[in-house]
Length: 322
Image (cartoon, rainbow, N blue to C red; front, top):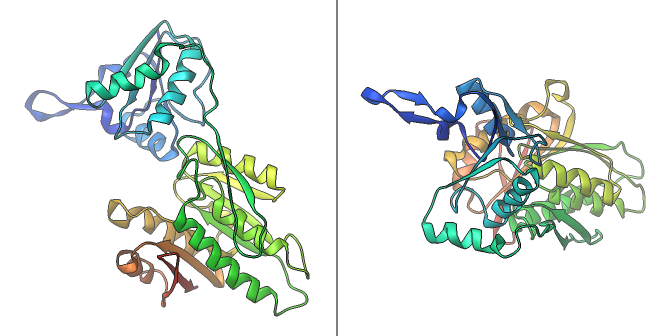
């Protein structure tokens, strides 16, 4: 019997048995595949349970006997849940179980949205525009699961505006210059990196000033960033990873931009800044953004000697030179 588990994290598959000992869920017995959207969760499942896990933007095709789907308001957005429910429906498993973490009324509200027409196929992609001074307005595409799906993130926009301004000032001083390598970590759909590239592409003394590398741990973000790179005509390498850039890229970047999440006591921000430190060339510049710099600034100071704060749109852009 082939079973597909969707939306489960490593901790979801552990429970307390006799004498308080952690035991593995019965769901992992037999021919089981776990699907995750985030590579971090795939690695955690493989480490804790030594189970077969797949990280991809969409559910794997197959003749599934059973599909279990774990969702709920605190686990994912309603739109992402509907998108995955639609994909599950198209796979036509012999058995489907909705493992809902939340109130019954929320579960019923979710199912009511597909009850009348379960065969209706909808696209949950969103298109929206954003720009920075000196750059063209770009129409971005994002998907459910992407950070700030359906709109630009104001922190990311502040970061793009500050970096674009500083890089334009830098380039306008010279008639000739080499291309710069820019790393956009936690890129999402590519908002920051592509807006910076757009701003610089309009300078009169050069075109295609940046070599872009983008990294995100979420498969839907990588899918969106690749699509946007193609639509905008910006050459870029988009990497799915939860531990920064590959070793081969150490010391190869001139500019690092990142909009790290603030939760988990800045542990994820540490991954961003550790990556920035080893990925930047000597003299390379690290830019991060945060609403209140008090929490992130001490973390950045662990990796860089000096942190300058640049204010924009009610956010603080933290600048450091390697």
